[in-house]
Every structure is written in structure tokens, then in C-alpha cells.
Amino acid sequence: MIDWRAIDTVLLDMDGTLLDLHFDSHFWLEHLPRRYVELHRLDEASQEKIRSRIISEQGTLNWYSLAYWSRELGVDIVALKREVQHLIGLRSDALDFLTWLKRAHPRVVLATNADRESLALKLPLTGLEDYLDAIVSSADVGEPKEAQEFWFALQEIEPFDPARTLFIDDNPSVLESAREFGIRHLLGIKQPDSRRPEHDLEEFIALDRFASILPDERPGAGADTKPHAGTNAGAQPTGGR
Image 1 (cartoon, rainbow, N blue to C red):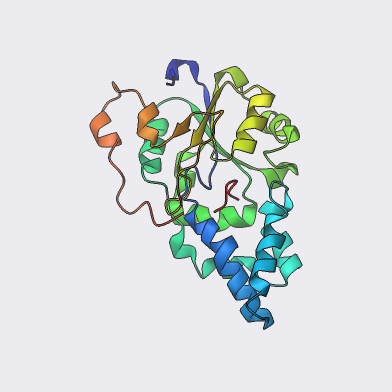
Image 2 (cartoon, rainbow, N blue to C red):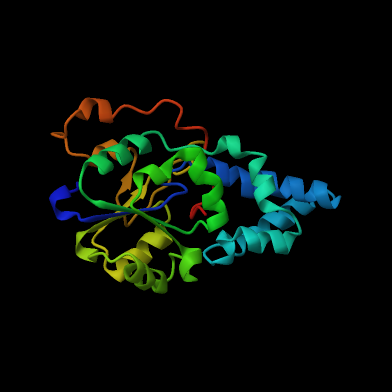
């Protein structure tokens, strides 16, 4: 599927691509609404109003901003995330894929909508930084990945040739934006959240496992395709933060 000789840069999403989306799905749709009701001493019916309020911002920079939701809801979002941080975990063979990329030659860049507060929580728990050459957050540029402005800004920060770039993301809206920008090699994720059904991206090839795109002739190929113990601790709505 991928001719690695034609790839100079690998752009990777974080939530739902490298990390299991279950953590974010659970936090934003279950844990936060429940704790909001408890902290503000509201009736249980208020949980659905909070879910609707959160989902209404999907695809915008606000959707991904922990500071925004802390202000809007009057709660400490980071502190509430720490209550369920044990659910943060890598997708099954993400670590094997990252390990192979580090031994190979592409430049690996995390291109994420997660803001810096989210990164400060998740990176130390997952060890992702050890495998990345750079990290660019939509919060750094002021535009979400769904907008063309993000890609122009990313190219200024981290120059790449769209024709020789592979981008992997679980969000079809983001993949469509990347395609419009001209990124040639695009892949989605079949099951971003390990506890929710697979989804059909229709216009994009969706990966079940990263091993399916690695060259068979790579050294130690057999070992690289085995899941890494303890990396699938759990997994958010499509378009993870």
C-alpha cells in the first residue's frame, strides 16, 4: 500500500490514531457531564445538555481547548481528566510502528488538534515524545486541522513536500482537509476507539493495524508486528483532541 521510498515525512494524529480514543470518548461524553452535574449540584437531566453543548463545538478550535471548557463550564478540566487518566493508552501496535519509523528514515511529526494542556497530560504517560521529531498543535497556529490555514501554517513551521508525505488520522473531515491541501498519501483508522464499533471512512483507506503498511522485508519484521504489552489501556468521539 505504501512505497516507503516515496515518503520523506510522516504526519501523525494523536487521539484515535496513535492513542486509543476510548479515554476521550469516556471523558467528554460520560465522565465530564457526570462530574459537572455533581460539582454544580444539578439534576441528572443536565448531563445531556452538557453533552450537547460540548458536541456543538465539534470541528472548531474551542472543541479542542481545555482552557475554553474550563472557563465555559466552571470546572478544572485538567484535574477531572486526571481522575480517569488510567484510561490513556496507545492503540495496539502503535509503539511497534513508531519504533520502526525511528529506525527508518522519514521525519515523523505529530500534527494534532490536542492543545498543550492535553499534550502535557498524555505525552509523559505514553512516551510518544521519544519517537517524534516535532510536535505541532492546532493551538500553536490558531486553526484546527479541519481548516486549510492549519496546513499552510504547518508547512511554514515544519517544511514538507505534500507529494512525499504520509498523513494518518482517524477524522474524515481532517483527512479531507489534508487532501484539499495536496497531501498525497492519506490513511484513516478503522477503529479509533477500541470499545466502539469500526467506522467506514468511505473515501479513504482505513487501517486496522499499522503492521499492514510496513515492508515485509524490514529487519525483525516478525517481532515488529506483535502487539506491545500494556500499550492498549483503553481509548473519544471522531476527531480526537
